[in-house]
Amino acid sequence: MPIYNKLVRDKIPAIIEATGKTFETRILDNEEYINELKKKSFEELDEYMTAETNGAAIEELADLLEIVKAFAELHGSNLEEIENIRKEKAEKRGGFEEKIFLVQVED
Image: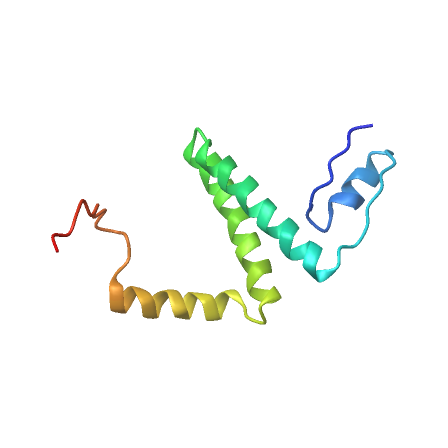
C-alpha cells in the first residue's frame, strides 16, 4: 500500500472509496494544516515549473490559486480581498507585464 502523508483535496477520499480501495486519513490541526499547505504550495509550484504545455501550466496555476484561496481563508480573508490588494499594489508599483529585469542600481 503506497504511503502518501500529504494534504489532498477534499473529495479525494470519496474518489478513492469509489474505486473500492481502502485508505486512511486524518484531520489536521491548524498548525499542521499551515505546514502542509506550505508544502503543497511548493509541490504545485514545482509542477508548474516543469509543465511542458500551456494547458498543463494553466492546470497547475489553478492548483496554485486553490492554495492561495486556502491561505487567504486561513488568514481570515478571501480571493476578492487579495485581488483588491494586488490591484492597489499594481497601481502603486506596477505589475510584471513589461518584463523589466533590473540588473543593478548605482549607489
